[in-house]
Structures are given as structure tokens and as C-alpha cells.
Image 1 (cartoon, rainbow, N blue to C red):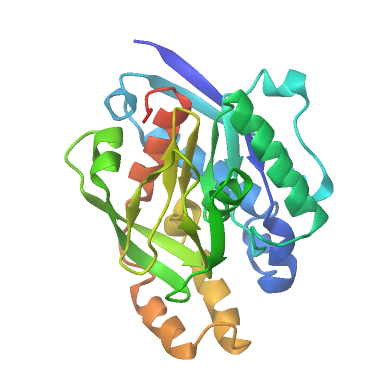
Image 2: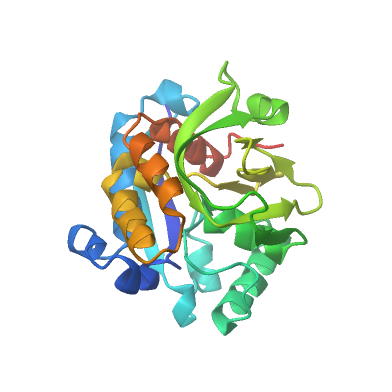
Length: 268
């Protein structure tokens, strides 16, 4: 039975937001999204059996932190030692004109041309789409948050295999991809947001769902309380979201599909 250790770059583009948004999260997760993702990947790696991962015994997932907001990216030599890139969530907009957002788009275009594996959550499908020919806008139906059911497209069902037609996951976004990049295939829809993640070839798999929040709903709960207090999101939507926040999710399954992607088992 083959065994494997995954070495992934963690592009942390959201922890700086937590310092003003919900600083108490940094008491539980000192390095913000990087810590959340380390704990998530460690847990799912430990829980996964070879049959969950195409017959591979995954012994470890090693995350190496990079901070694109500070211009910190892997060198070519470091890239050669990686199995891929994971992009975190962010409060930024993929259409923002900040220098770091524009630079990140340039890097993504380069990785896309070189078919370096790109994955990630929430902000990831937006920034990657914006970089390679898609379009991101304020989500036409508005903010979507808390636990949602994502109905997999037929193509996504074939891509992941098995009998699953939907999965539950926590989401939190004000923006949405309104036009997919050329060649991209939708993962699914919630009925509120048209494209809840997408895939392209064997080198891009990006999810709108947050498995790190789903693993610990307290994270999103803290964020939502601030959003209600500061009237960033309608109170009625927050209250409804809080009622569903602790419902079971399929974050383990979603993360396992991400592992399979980095293991080279998935392609459109």
C-alpha cells in the first residue's frame, strides 16, 4: 500500500483581517487561518483510511506558511518541493485594486500557466477566477452564511465519484463568482449562490465552503456576532444563521476530496 506525505503552501491572506474583525479568534488560533488549517488537515489526515483516499495511506500533511499580503511567496526551488497551494479566506474583494491583490492575481496566472496545483476556500474561488478570466461581484442575492447544502453538479459527481449528490458545509461570503473562467466546471450551487466552488483540469479545485469553520463553528459564531453588532449584515440573517450554525457538516468529506486532488486522483 503506497504511503504519502503532502507538502502544501498555505497562502494566508485573511489573518490580518481577524486582528480588527474578531481578535479573540487569535487567542484560540494564534496564527489565524494557518493554525486553523493545520489543525483541520491534521485531524482529517488522522481520521482518513486508505479507502477514503484512493488507496493511499496519508501519513502527514505539512503546511508551510506564506503571506502574500506581505509579498511573501515560494521561490521556484521551494515550489519544486511542494504538492500544491492552499489559499485561505479573506475579507478582501477579489476585484480590489490593492497592490497585494493585483500581485496575487499575477502569481495565480503564472501558476495556472505552469499547472501548479491551486486549491483553497471562500476567497480562493473568487481570486483565482478573477485572475484567469472569470468575474467576481457582490453576490446578486446578497450575503450567504452559516451551514448550507451544496447540490453537486453532474460533472462534480463524476469528478468525485461515489453516490454523493450533495454535501453540507459552512459558508460566509458577500461576493460571488458570477462568470467562471474559460474551461472551468462548477462544483455546485446552493440555490442562493450560483457557483459554490469550481474545478479546472487537474490543477485547480477551489471550494466556497469553509471546512475550518465547520470543524469549529465557534469561529464563525464570533464573526457573525460582530457583524450583527456593527450592522455589517442584516440582524435577521445573522439570527437565522446562528440557529443553523452548529448543524452537522461534511467538512471531513470535503477535505478528503482536497487531499485526493493534491494526490493527483482528480481531473476534469
